[in-house]
Length: 404
Image (cartoon, rainbow, N blue to C red; front, side):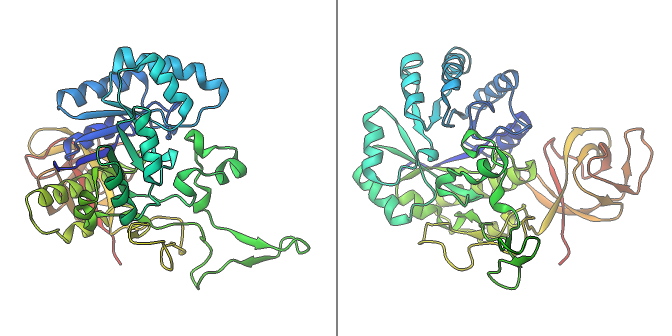
């Protein structure tokens, strides 16, 4: 088997550039009206075309997501969008979940390859075989599958490409097909508008005692009873490849540039080490823990999740490091324009990560954009000028270790 593909999310044009820089092989992205991410930071048609050019220039692979389950009023809009993809974008494949959308694709854009989304919930080899008969070339398997089940699917349908999520958030609902958000907020997760209601803190109220709340406790920490820990399959990539997975997929179109750079770099190294016959580098687990997470588990891969798989303590993510900023422009004399994301003080020690390097240094000089020296900078206060090591690229990530 050839080296598996590293497939990463591109939530917007800036994140696409980060993914290219830190080692991705392929990208999945889409316009908010038609895909499972409809937040504010997303692609316009113009930005999408810029991203297409960047991906093509780098010789990488592009998958376009149109994987929501559209209501009837959206059917005609889907047709026009698929025509746009055919005439302008020309993706390597389209990711979809709805059989009706597949029929539209076959009518409008019959030559394009189709991948079946994880949203379609294909749990067994007969389901994979069914989609193969429809001309589908790849199935994205649900996170709920275990290693043995993946092996059986590959044994029964060996000529079908199989893709699997290896890193990121796990939804409390089956394969992400959630009704809680729509019921509580009117934001339908199956239309890409999830409000993440499962991460909220809940209290129990008895009907005849209004205002008298009783805690819902699993242990002494509290009540986040649906707050699943995140998936990390870094140690299992060789097993997954041997089981038939050809594409390792990272979740997180709404995550930060720090998340995308760190996780992409870690999985890039793990895949390359595996291809060269080197042992798994355990330090990569420490690297991904530097990003915001809820604690890592292997999901369903080694069996049904049980005790310890819910993060009861709080909704806010944990991490060993705090994302400080990202280099946006190289100036003269080791000076850089940095987009600041969190508080930083002069004299603090930071870690700088680039695609090929990682090192610590103290911040000795900081300036505002009028070249006035400052002692402290804050996230949301705009770009600042920092003196750093010479030779850093645009896209270098700055972070600081969080004290215990």
